[in-house]
Amino acid sequence: MKFIANPNHKLLTVLSFLFLGITSCQNQAKKVDLKETKPNIIYVYVDQMSANMMSCAGNTYLKTPALDYIASNGMRFTRAYTTNPVCSPARVSLMTGRFPSYFKDDEGNEIRENRASMKIPEVSQEVTNTTIASYLKEANYELYFGGKEHLPESLTPKALGFNKFSDDERGELVNKAADIIKEKHKNPYFMVVSLINPHDICYMALREKATSKNDAILLKRAKVELATLDDAMKIPEGVSEDEFYASYCPPLPKNYEPQIDEPKAVKSLINARPFRKNAREHFTDNDWKRHRYAYHRLTEVMDEEVQVLLDAIKNIGQEENTLIIFSSDHGDMSASHRMEHKSTLYEESANIPFMAMWKGHIPAGQINTTDLVSNGLDLLPTVCDYANIEGVSDVRAKSLRPLFEGEDVEWRETLGVESEIGKMVVDKNGLKYARYDADGIEEQLLNLKQDPFETTHFTNDIKFKDDLERLRNIYNTEWFK
Image (cartoon, rainbow, N blue to C red; front, side, top):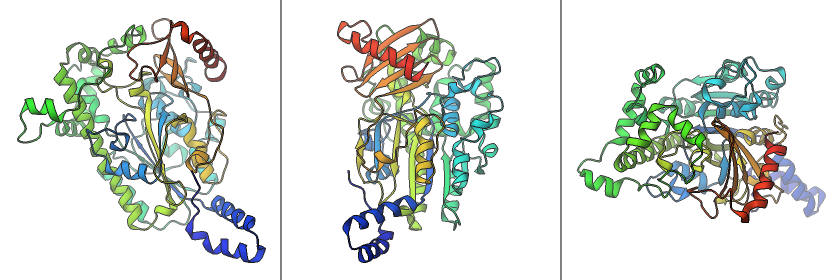
């Protein structure tokens, strides 16, 4: 990929050529101009969206023109992962650039699931000084945050210095964000637009078996969520049920059945919540098809909201001054292995969309299928790089800017991912080493090239003995000491 220079700086380039008279100085002027250009940065962060839930990713069962526009005018990564495939821990990473397990609860236990992460006590001064907000304030950025938080008190946007402009997570949010985009700003800004959908899909299984007091409270509060879900589940007018399930619903996934030798930790995760157990044991094929249909419709709802942001940027002529990054906190199992929800180390839950667009700076239409990206670790150093400041919170994190701009750089060979039932190391060649600890210690070696749907595992295959030992060692020494 070749770098595309900023057209606003042609005059400076010409003057450099005239006064210095050599081509090398012209090239140097372009580099200097680029580093002095500090774009507005908009991070669109959605909830519960798997990497394959876009038409630009080849999914023909939905239409996502807004997301496709970002992809066609920038770069899309296919091997991006969350730090932890559940809401609150992933969002702790967004703010801090650290694995959730860096933080401990009041008993010294690692933070690896929602409830514990909401109880993180007051963070250290070191953390406070190295959050994404702290760095960008140092770079004189205006800070805006709108939408879903799901963060402990010490890491809320307000606590970190963001201007919280909307508590809505849907249409009102993007309209208010569009108003801010249209304003004149003295300094560049960093804005997080945290959209809820397609997360409303969670309520389909939940309301079928809401047995706990907490589940009942969730449902009572979820009037908008349930109404949106019901709309997404509707059979189109004039379509019979037989036609709907045969032609309108996405088919059941290729990994519809539970994995061979499924880890006890996965069974434990399912059995811990009655609605999850009920879905696996009692949902019919048509129930799962309808779940997948609604999940796709809810993703389209979110795409329409993203379009509002893109229109606002384009209508005021700010596409060449605005870096847009799009991603999700985690995915949804969407009937794979007869599961819904998240929290697993399977690809559907842990592999997330990640795209970036900055017209004139990031070459258009690029798809990166090899480099491993950590949303939670890499976002902080990336936006700091574009703000012309070095941001470091986890030394294993990397700025994605060189990849965005087509530079030939050495990249990581492996990547760590956590969950409430275990942790894993993903290898650039498609191997995954998972160590589960929710029901005793269990190891698995998965191979995405030979078995992309993770229907089985290769832990005991003699051909992968060396790979198993190599990744086991990397797990212990590089990611989870």
